[in-house]
Length: 119
Image (tube, rainbow, N blue to C red; front, side, top):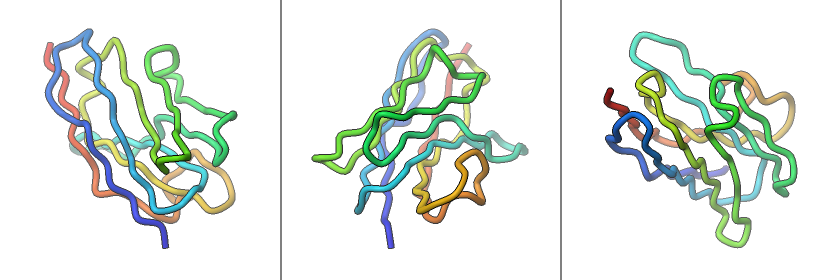
């Protein structure tokens, strides 16, 4: 069982930055997803358990950076140049094995943190 706790969401103006954190109870492959009202939960970024491999959705590539501090069992999502369309609830998730792009690929989920970007 892996427990995940997100933090760092909030309200920011377009062009601003936020950093999300996800504290995990174990070291696994981790992903970030987001879900806007009335929309499906979409892949944002993922990072391997040791950290050298990272993956991004095209919509955030070049603006978001995923990283991890394994000494703290924490994964981060640095979000820069935020746009109103980035507004969503952001979830971190832990994957034990398999692919990484779909929500069903993940075994454990955090409670989510709201990110709102005003224009």
